[in-house]
Image (tube, rainbow, N blue to C red; front, side, top):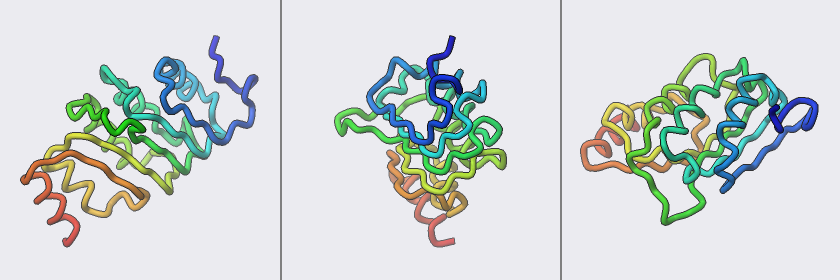
Length: 151
């Protein structure tokens, strides 16, 4: 049975699970089961997302699962922890761009290592809800990002 469900937290609006890595699979199941439909803000520590868990997060970012989610914080609290090759960066960016995403308004995010195309998308202004962005890039990705900013 899910601990996070509509019976135990019927009107939960704000959930901060920074540095609680053991909960991730249960969280995704609770979200996808519709147990957190009233959630307005969700804060997660990127450092907890090892082994492709970012893909699980991306698959949970749907308005059908989280119709009230306005703020998603996905950054690392540990300045020493940066998994620049974390799987799921593309999936997370795609989920944030998707028409069926929650009605996001404020998304501080650490995407880690990005491709040229991902850097271009992030710099395009398409995702106006991005309020804080951290990405790791070399000259090619930085150039793509900067070109997108001025286009």
